[in-house]
Length: 110
Image (cartoon, rainbow, N blue to C red):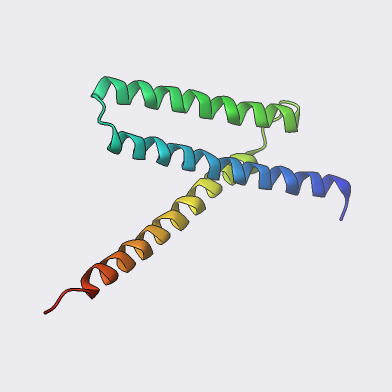
């Protein structure tokens, strides 16, 4: 495999992982909102700050790796990484809920 293709593959994986990291950060933010109640203004400000930081992260990674060139497969990799990570987390959440229900009902007498 040529060096250029290896670099592109590494950049694709970095973009994929960036998308996964961004969805993790957003889900943590949503979780914190459930623990600590916020007003609508605070939620809007948090979302604005999150998306500004996310855009900055994406821009910096594209600028550093691509010398400012736009590569659409990078955007697709970011979206794919976020989508896959969300799907994995949703699947794990369903499994945990089923296990908790199973163990919660285990000690009850019917």
